Length: 431
Image (tube, rainbow, N blue to C red):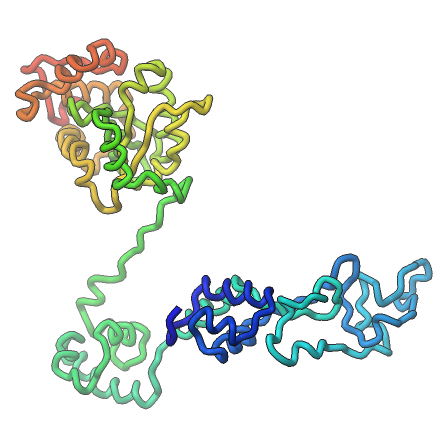
């Protein structure tokens, strides 16, 4: 660990461990590549005080605690315990003979009780260095130091006299920063924040563009069932797995929304025959995705399901964040494998994204799906899968899929072949 850098959590854990081993500050500093005074300040600044007593004995820091024979300070004549060993009433609150005792060992390095051999039998107030507690205090101090306005009153008045008249003349802060760079010497974004916080006499209302644009709304993070779902399932893991197991069937899965908060489609795209299935769900949740795969597993029977859905490739949507429930059946047997594309990389499952364009011809973006049933969706997908593709040799996905896996499977999934002249890719299909 190099000098002139803040201690990290790993460094603090090392300090805590070395203190338990009774190593000196100099020895700890040598291991971490720091100055001994840095270690001493770290320990003294983050001491945690504990009044926990020890096993079977309460906290008691009275000077006479070991030879005290006083009883019944609480007024209860039935108590058989000495007042020095009472868990309910500390001596400091009732006894007139109380004198506080402080361990003399804490007045010199290492200033804490971490490595003290008598810690388990000592009833005095303990001083502990905890890495987790120290890191939490450090982060809080660091956060507080970065809050507020780092500007003196004199500097604020000087900037106000320079900037506010120019803003009221209609000039932008960008123009002012360019024209007076040597006088201002602050970032443009910082000046916008100062104006927004009413630090200057000029206000946001004096900058029409700021008022017109308004504040951007932050997008709320979606709830993920398993936050560690990507471990071992990244796109790099997918490429490695496919290299080790060539020839497996890859199915790209995605969600297609109508209106926000309404029904949503789960699309499953077979990359080789380019056939796509779609299933309507009431909400875009992880459970509705799991229910769909469980339904398919029963509908197709385990052997057919495992043959078709060997590898699933999805995006990072929260609806796919419970992979184990999809990969395993109810008996705990593996039925498929799931991998995830990189964030902001829809091109990694581009086949499914391209096929969505055909769905949007029939259900334009923004159209609510609430009035559609699964029968409507099956009809739409039958027309899409009966649409010939140049890269399939002018064959339809239906025909290619049927030649590879059999037409019976298509019938089981309610996909029909539509005659070429009857194929409709317009919203009128579902009206």
